[in-house]
Image (cartoon, rainbow, N blue to C red):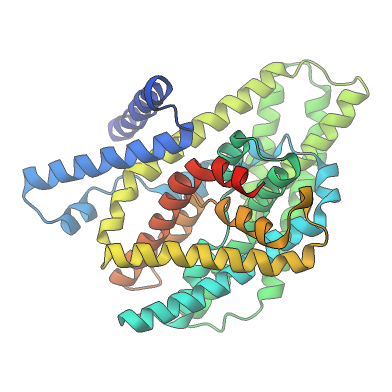
Amino acid sequence: MHNFLLLVSIIFVLVVCIGFFNEKVTRLTDEIALLLFSAVVGCILTAIWAGVRSVNVRELLESVQVFHLNEYLVEGVLCFMLFAGSRNLKLRSFRANARKIGVLAFVCTLLGAVFYGGLFYLVCLLLHLPFTFPMCLMLGSIIAPTDPIAATSILKKFGLPEKVGFLMEAESLLNDGVGVALFVCFSGMVAGGSGSGFLLLMAREILGAVAVGLIITCLFFPVFLHTANKQRRIFVTLLMVALSYFLCEHLGCSGAISCVVCGLCFSAFREKAERDGRLTGLTEFDDFWETLDVLLNSVLYVILGLTFVRILQMPMVAVLSLASILLNLICRFGSVFAGTWLMGELPDGYGKLKFSALFTWGGLRGGLSIALAMGTAGLVLGDQYNIILGCSYAIVFFTTVVQGLSMKKVYQHLA
């Protein structure tokens, strides 16, 4: 208990102090400031610790990893963050843009994973790294999905056109399920299996998640609608989200997609009830979910920043970091450009090249990529694991800080 409270205290000290400093001095986007300055703090503390203990960096990094991002995110708060991000999206907008969202979330994610895996395999051959082609495809599945948390918390603050912003947010909310299915398929090949049955796996992940999310929302929304207790309304939605995620994880479906479906269905049911005059007084409810979303996002970005120092475990850090970032940009652009031929008319008058460039620079990665990378620990050897984790961290840091900070200027240049 004392260790838990100590870790919580450290995280909240950084959330508060960095947030206040950013508010008064740097005035960056909150999530970017938390990630950037937490990374600086983590590197400084590691250097001090290494000097005091007189140990090499690798030994130190292996001994001080107390923040378990995959446990915090995938096994903890992801479901609530996804519901918070999707509860205000309109189902009508999803239906109107179903073709474009489907291509971005499914086709582009698959192409991005394959493109990245193929090019990274060539880099491995060039640098004589001990990576097989299935391992490279597995890394591609980790890198390919854009991050829903980054999209909902960072991109929406830059004043993008409504249709473009909606497509980016909707893509990121759905393509993590595709990424997980690809990860399961390719990691099965790495583990010695055939990696077959991708379409069946995808159908189970997605269709099962949709069914669970829809059923749970239909069961519990009447309770939300008919209770007059403001706190109970909050409890009902917390129950909906936690239960749908739990059931999907045990049924082999995508808990993340299920939570997005819960959010979309809840939004549709709520809109109808408010239009009919059967539901009022949701200000405190909305304030709760907005505050919870900000809190969980802040903690996530602080943990990401503090653990960024683990990139130093990767051999050839500078070369592989640069290679992974460049390959990510190339493969993201290639997959989106290929997908534009299937989307029909693009929004806001964008041509294929400008649309692909905008979605390439807006394709932020976040905690989900790191959590998946950490999930490879039992599948590969030590140096291979460090390379996978290091490349993932390099891409997450670059897309969040560099692309996130420059997104507005890129949009203005392409507009």
